[in-house]
Length: 151
Image (spheres, one colour):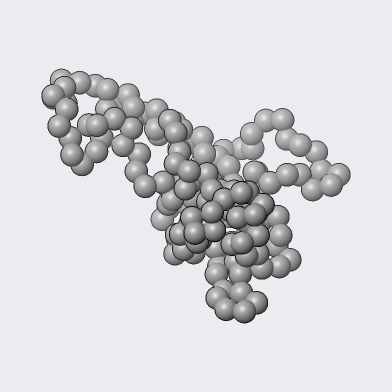
């Protein structure tokens, strides 16, 4: 399984902004921090804003901040919102021209793997991805599994 660059950058953006709750962040500073194109991040910011993960303020003194607390941002839900599709094999897509479709069980196997992958991501929030605060211990095991909020 592989996520798109857009999803990777979206998670990086959320992590960056989450670590600066005391102020608005700018797309330019996130772009500089991660060596990412500002144009690409503008598109990602728009998607994250539309989906309710970021608040965006335009104009002089504007910027971006989280729309929810990091503990309320489920990683699996973000990935589902940002990832354009999960068609991992041809028969999962809209234009299914696979000659094996009728007697093949591959789609079910791949769907099961995808469900496990997304289910694992559902067990984490943005807060789990952030570096520990000074004096806070680093968790060795993943946190207790959480359910993704229904969209």
